[in-house]
Image (cartoon, rainbow, N blue to C red):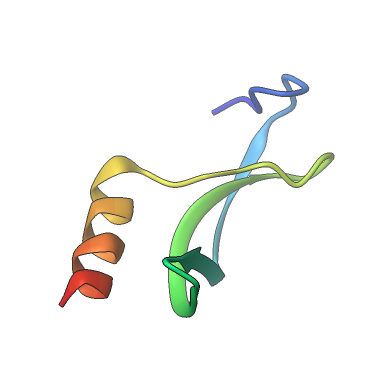
Length: 58
């Protein structure tokens, strides 16, 4: 996968993600995502982001 901002190669990582919604902060551990090594842009697969949002709603 290439970075949308700079067209550099992205690397797969498992990391912590902080998500702010409705004036609340959620810290989600062990999130699989792609991250640009140059600019830091991150991309999460749609299925993973849907799973995270479903966890927050419940």
